Image (cartoon, rainbow, N blue to C red; front, side, top):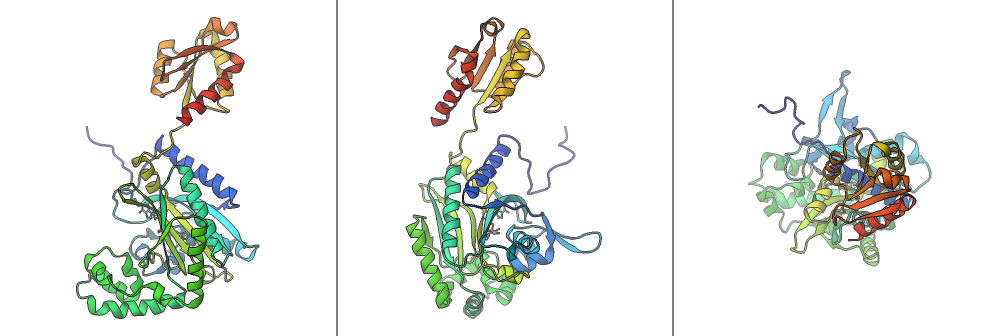
Length: 425
Ligand code: HAM
């Protein structure tokens, strides 16, 4: 037999249960936790004018230079699938008049992003991010708020040992001075650079920090650091961010070579990861401050700070490291000829609280028990005809095999209690 006629586009994938459910649960946790900090959800289009990303993420970044899905629409306008969501949120906030409204403005989002990268483990061409953007707070309290919230969210997903790496890239001006010093340092050391890295050296030397090439990495050893070029205000800001993070007990370490692969950052830049017992680090996402971006895109001068979590990666790490929360236990309701109608009503009632499966094809009892097994049901409620006339039902625990008879009106409470016991284990 030959394979399927149509396949998902390289670097994209389909999500089925239980994986799709884990994505939905993470998004629900984001809504709950970010919501409790006063963040509301924003949804922006997957498609934007190409120019928006060139202006914000930066023409010379890898993302814009070689990873965007860009095409001309039928009227010849250049459009791109969004490679990230900050630019779109900023555009929306300006266009919708929110940038001129009351500050601070707190938004979060979840959705697919697109980058033409070489697919490999946990790297896709369509991937999902959950992110937040906080507008209108110039001081370090903003960084502390979003990092506290980020760690609360990752903790709720099941992560325990988390840390952030932290740096400051200063203002646009200090970035420029740093870039010049970096170019002067690297030029005499660039004989082994490839064509693309030579372009970066000429156009935007900071982008060389994104390079994985060994010659570039070696040349960068001992190069100037962003921190040596900070203006006094950026330095104060950075020191205060570090002090407050310590006070808030957010684990972080200084990473002087961290500049991030997007051009819009000013001052704070950070990435965050899970640390394993064996010292391995699983990168989960990144973010930072972008105080010039709203103005650069045509809005009022407004500070901004945010982060994005790579959801595909994050959920993979949870699963690989055995940290994923178990899916809620399933209840299967089995019935006989004379209790079928009653079962229908009972299922509707239980579904308000539990994940309930049942047989919709009026099959025999044996087939129903097989279906319960296939559904991996932890509990089976059996509506026997005689018991039902007495106002009773049977509740079976598939794992222990124990079965008991209960009053019908105490079934929900009994299930609730057993579910709690299962979750606590
Ligand atoms: P970013 O570092 O480009 O930042 O992306 C954030 C995260 O998205 C990465 O750390 C990674 O987990 C995930 N990611 C990126 N590319 C892929 C891929 N090809 N496959 C799977 N996961 C991927 C941003 O996007 C900024 N907008 C973050 C931000 C928000 N800064 C301020 N506000």
